[in-house]
Image (tube, rainbow, N blue to C red; front, side, top):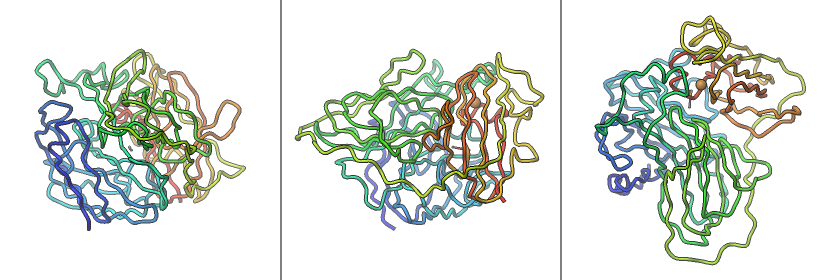
Length: 426
Ligand code: C2O
Ligand code: CU
C-alpha cells in the first residue's frame, strides 16, 4: 500500500483538491468535519478529511480494494459512478446492498475494466450527503497513458450559502419542483494550480454538483476533447464549450498557451470557477493530440427491445400518477418491477422522453450507452444523458452486466423526489 499524501489542509485552503493516492488498497472514511472549502469555513461531510475526497488512482486491469469505514452518525454507501463493476459492489441500497450503519465497514472489490475519468460519491441520502462534500475523483489510467506534462483533475461544485455564510438548508419546496438546488457559490477544484506555458496537459473535468449544469469554457488551451464520461472518443473533437450535467465528465488533452480560466457560461452565466496559473515557459509541442484507446465495451446488436421512459412532473410539467414531485412512467421512486428486463448481452433501446419544463441528466448504473442522433446514428458512449426541457432522445445499451441497476436523474433533488427506476439484467 503506497500513499503519497501532501499537506491536505494547505492545499484545500488554496482551493485545491486533495492529492492523488496511487494505491491498490484504500480506506474511505466519511465523517462530519469543519473544513475550509472554497475559502470558507463550513461544517461539511468529508471523506478522509477533505472536500473533494481523496483522488483515487488505479491502472486499467487492476482491482481496487476500497474499505468504506463509516464515521458518520448516519448510514453510508459509496457508488463508483461510471465504473462497470459487479452489481453487488455498486453501492446502492434497496436494490443491491444494505446501508452501512455508523461504525461499520464494507469492503468494495472493484475490477477496473475501463480506463478513464470516473468519480465516487455517497449513494445514500445523496441529495444531502453529496451536497455536503461526499464525492471525489476516481481515475483509471491507461496501461500506456498518453504523454502529458500534467494530468489534472478539475471538479466543479456549488454550495448554497445563506446570508450568514453557512449552508442554507431551509427547505424550499419550489426548488424541488424546478431546476433543483442551485448553489450561489460555484467553484472549480483543480488538483494542480500551476503549469508552464507550452506544457501539454490532460484535464479531467467532473461535475459532482447535486443539481447544477455547467457550460464549461476553457481559455488558455489549444487542444481536443478526447473522452466523454470516461469513454474515449473515436475521433477527438476540437475544444469548445462543453455542457456538463451533474455526473458527467470530459477529458481534454491540450497545450497551454496562457493562464487557464475555467468559466461557466450556462444559461447566460459568465462566471470564473477557477484558474490554473502559468509560471515559466517551454516550447509548445508540435506533435498532434493523440486519441485514447477504446475501452472494451460490447457493440450493440442489430435487433433490440425498445422501452420508453417518460420523464414527468415538476413545475409546468406533464401530470402524472406518481406520489412525488417527479415521476418516471407514472411512478415516483423505485418501482417494485424493473423498467426493463434484459437477458445478459441483450441490446436495448430506451426512448427518453422529457415531458417536463426542466432539463434532466439521466444516469444508468453499471453500463454505458450510445446516444442516438436525429438520423439514428450511434453517438459517443456516455453514462449520463442530458435531456433539455421537452426533448426526446433514444439511447442504446448492451446490457451485459448482470444484476439490478438504477436508472435515475442525477439532479439529486429530482432523484430524491421521485425520478428513479431500475433495470434488471438476468
Ligand atoms: Cu452518480 Cu446513482 O449515481
Ligand atoms: Cu431531473
